[in-house]
Image (cartoon, rainbow, N blue to C red; front, side):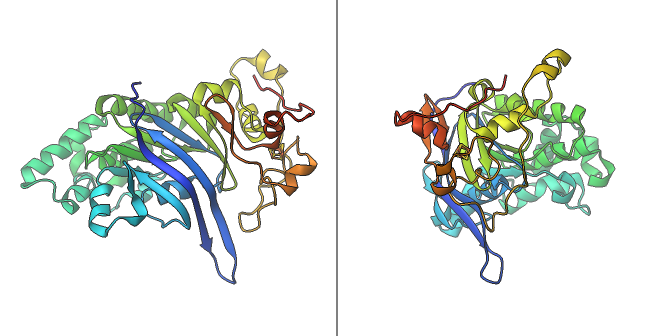
Length: 338
Ligand code: SF4
């Protein structure tokens, strides 16, 4: 995959809190920063409720941010005048988890795909618009006979293809795919991932791929950010994350992925996380993972670990590495998962 290193997206210390009544605040996202380079796929992973979908919606401007900045091609998404934001939205599109819920059941496939084209007045004639719809259907592995049918007439995988065609209707540069395969059968998941990879190659698309399943994210991502309870805890290249996970939470997530080889599967070490995911309304003090971390130390519940480049292009927020970086003595309790 070719990457020119230019940043198409910069997420800078973004915080998103929701007021949920009785003075309570849901801290969905806290101080999250990362960049996405043109042409790459950046995977964002974590359990449900970790804030990854809120980040996606904040990037595209569906949510305003509480603090921080989102720059798309250098433009601050949340400070643009309405008209410029409208134009920018043409370049940023979203694919949703549940294709059925995101497609209007009363519209034909042609209407579903043409709607964004009409909103943005892309074509002068219906004929041109219809030709583009047929072309898009073919690009996503459907055909023009599907244009007059309704979403309920399709399988889950086909509906996600319709969702992808709709996202491509405005010829965007950047697509946020929010759990695009989670609702699909395993056999269909691989087909949709392959389609996304193929479209990326053909059109030079950039993806933010949001998922809870680390095994599928590896198939598609160049770099991966791991989130826990609204915080980014680790960020590195895809191979580096799988071969050398640093954060105890990433290690636990990876240790839960089954290995196809029965001997390896039996002999490997598994980290079972204790306790429930805490509430983002009342997150733990210090490190947000401290209530479940098998390696927690005294400092962990007192001080929030800072975001550090522990190894080249490998960032982590964990006191284990902070001690190492500051040349303090530490009991090296980190377990490597292979
Ligand atoms: Fe575990 Fe402490 Fe690292 Fe948090 S900072 S992940 S509690 S060792």
